[in-house]
Image (cartoon, rainbow, N blue to C red; front, side, top):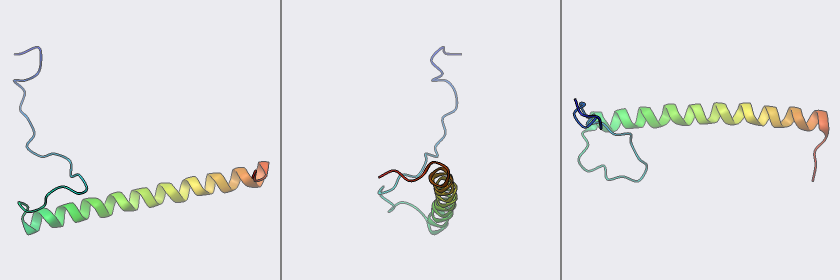
Length: 66
């Protein structure tokens, strides 16, 4: 056992990165990436709605500053 962890199994999967080369991916891998990105977009949109509601509530209480 190495103290550096280089003997641990390494994952071949890396997180998708926007703009990366897609040439070597199969149709099913592309479908998985699309689903992953769509789920992330939904998560981001939900967080944006939440933050906008918080901002609107703060403006209603404290007034909007220029």
